[in-house]
Image (cartoon, rainbow, N blue to C red; front, side, top):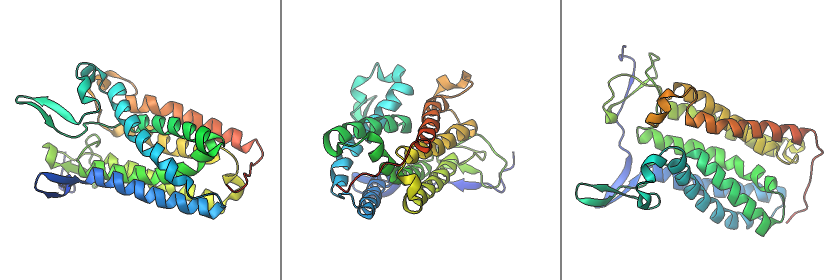
Length: 282
């Protein structure tokens, strides 16, 4: 397989380091994503006349739920065989080596787990804070989440991870940091582009299509369909993340995406067949 037109990729996963302290691109994208998401959601609530202070309370729930949910998602769906024997490593960023335990950072987060965690957090937030349906909050929150997802995938690219199978296409990446010698699909870029397009579409619906924005569940449904359909189809050209997936017709990422796509279709259907609901400013 020719690699003459391939992109040789050997980016450092570290943005910068200062002595024993290092800032990695992945963590930076995570943090910047939350900051941008906070700003975008605040402006959205101001635009519609809702209390922007709700965002402060909401983001406490969301940040904790995203990290805990994504971590548990990876542990349960992708690595339970290992973590069931190393329980201490589930929430402590350490691993056991020849010289005992050492700090290594979390080795694995799963977006499906993060999504489940966020849904649970928003349900609690809706009961305790807004006193409105969970979909009212989700319809607004999913807009910046799509952008955050795109940024996190950029972090994956800088880590030289979550890439695809071999390709002859001229934009194939040779991930030299992983000792790859043939070009592979840069699936992190594919997903990032899809998430950015989803973000733009949701933003358009929110600001320009009031008749759709006020149909409870519509934006959440569009988000589920767009994000998880992209994830489902891109998985066909992505290398399996875990060895147990090698004999599966659909890998774990695809299996976990199907319920979200179906839920999205149901939400859009019910949103379009029911009248809009406009809540008073709060």
